[in-house]
Amino acid sequence: MAQDRDYGFGTRAIHAGAIPDPVTGARATPIHQTTSFVFDSAEHAASLFNLQTFGNVYSRISNPTVAVLEERVAALEGGRAALACATGMAAQMTALLAILKAGDHIVAASTLYGGTIGQLGIGFSRLGIETTFVDPRDPDNFRRAIRPTTRALYGETLGNPRVNVFDIEPVAAIAHEHGLPLVIDNTVASPYLCNPFAFGADIVVHSATKYLGGHGTTMAGVVVESGKFDWSASPAREKFPEMLEPSKAYHGVKFHETFGDFGYTMKARMEINRTFGGSLSPLNAWLILQGIETLHLRMQAHCRNALRVAQFLSDHPLVGWVNYPGLASSPDHALAARQFRAIDGGPGCSGILTFGIRAADPAKAGERFIDACEFLSHLANIGDAKTLVIHPASTTHRQLSEDELERAGVSADMVRLSVGIEDIDDILWDVDQALRAAVA
Ligand SMILES: *Cc1c(COP(=O)(O)O)cnc(C)c1O
Image 1: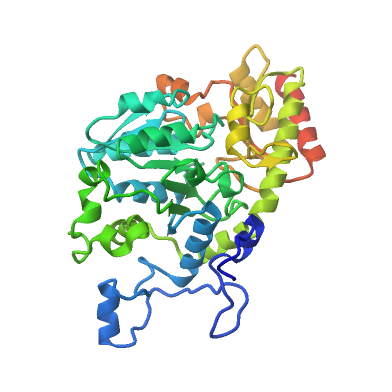
Image 2: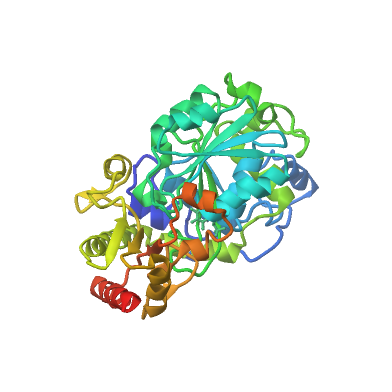
């Protein structure tokens, strides 16, 4: 592809990172289902191990099929480099462990995906890394929670399941004042609707399992680096000496000096993925690449269908409340309009929405609604072409205490829909008949 042209999103979604195979002419990206790669010579092997020559050694470290996915997601996010991981959880862990160690601290939004609250709040605390969860509605809550040991701020573009919109710009400014990177999970918005780097985020993580793959078939995660965070400038250099000093974990390499604006990605690759092993398989990378080729089309359809469902529920006599930032009545609507790509004149707000049923026992009505759905699938996932439905308080967020549930914005009656790309009339029909059955 011509390097000087600013290709559109759909073109990048289909082509970025890939060229016809120079050996066979295969137009589709080949699945390089191999663990290891033959060295040209002893000298070549040594220079690969010293990171002096770029090339593949072993698929835990890098693989040509996985590399196409990495380049593609970096191109879609407007980032400098990316690292693919086995799952979204592995990507978050890798992104953070590349820059945190025991004794360090994270400030994170309290409205994160339940699994992430567990990873940071329980998993990382076992490793001696502490997290303070703050209400993200006021960016100053992040500033107030920063300590001398803080090494990252963390949020989700669109919270899961509260679909609250994260105001990236002011939190990025607070992070940078303190020499800290802002890490943003962009899973729910996807790079089609939002590029967090454009608002000052430094590291983006994805559960590619969701919209990037898009068909509920494949687990994967990606870490993307903007290339703009200067690890060598004060006060960052005092906080991240390991970016500058010879690596004890990898052959004395100085990641920032050697790799410059993709030094963080190389550190995450060589010190974390290589050592802790959360790497992505080539077959799964290929499946996610297939999904990404239609990301732009699917996201438009998800946004349109979700807005129609949100409007339908808002007008429905059996529905007590609806939460979707695409609704003009949502308190997050103006922020969504600033941060997200416009679709049909309004902000595209992805496919997730939540609502509560008007009933004497709304929690029970939520469970009955789910049991009454005909083709809406009851399962714990989002971002599938199929419409999915779940009751978070009794499933995904079950492990949270009542206090944590409240801070995550998960009420007992909340039903979460991940609106798919089926015909809208069929989705509305199923929602309507299940609502009637729930209160019958
Ligand atoms: C699903 C999800 C994750 C975890 O990703 P997996 O691929 O399931 O490991 C992280 N963040 C968000 C917002 C998610 O929806």
